[in-house]
Image (cartoon, rainbow, N blue to C red; front, side, top):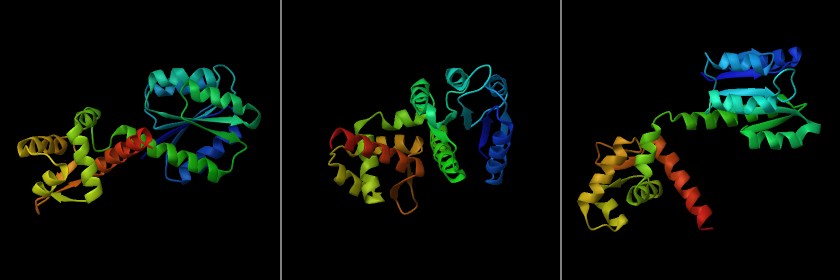
Length: 215
């Protein structure tokens, strides 16, 4: 279950947010100010922090780099008044991940929360460790294998060799082994290679990057 921290000095708003998020099945804790939140971060990991911009003591803007130092992978959504939208842009430059403008509708809040929790799951690497990701994508042929399997859905070894247009079969076999160990592909009982969920994410990233470089 994702763990969320709501940081706001307005008691009524903070209580409402805690109630709404809890009703959505999320584990929620609250802090009345940024200093209390920073203390809580020392002992409790959070996937997401909803952080008010204007608070007594350490304000939201000052708290962002401090949170980043303690919890670099925690997603931060800034809550800011309409008149302070320009400050929200500055907050993003400081390291916040998203912002929502007060007063906001619950639907808009939950959309932002779900979007950022999804990104948090990806960054956590549910199925693949970070070292495995770098190792899996470090070689051009391995990247090509992922893209071919993304297009084909599944492929037997010799069909894959033909599609890759590689004469050295042992080289392809070696890189397939690396990709299996990294958690990107599976070799089924029917002797076909397919992408895992992590492999699909990696191939999607590769396709996006390739499209950005070659529009």
